[in-house]
Image (cartoon, rainbow, N blue to C red; front, side, top):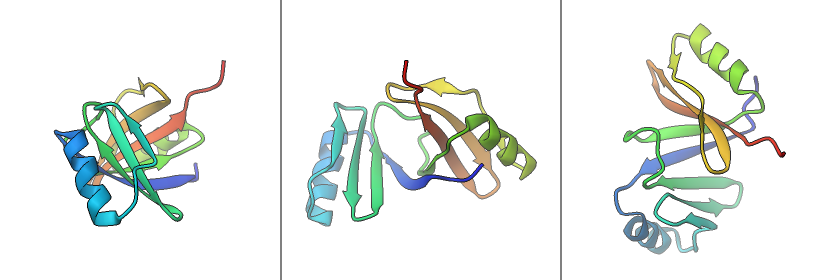
Length: 113
């Protein structure tokens, strides 16, 4: 498994207020807002995500895009972490992994039907 992308994720209780705050700090509009669930800011090749009501953890985490969730689960286990069950989000399949070095959410876009 090779990571295809990585994004820091900040959990927030009030997505609208948090998005307004980060907009004022970063000086850019969010590139994606999904109601009270999720927002993200793209800055060049970097991204910051805010997780509102749709989050797997209340801890700040790193979100890693992968092509194969089963491989990611196996690799995190081999490296000393543990992965939960794969969950289906509105746009992706995802799994929460806890490691001795932090929380990782591995995700993969939903396969097209």
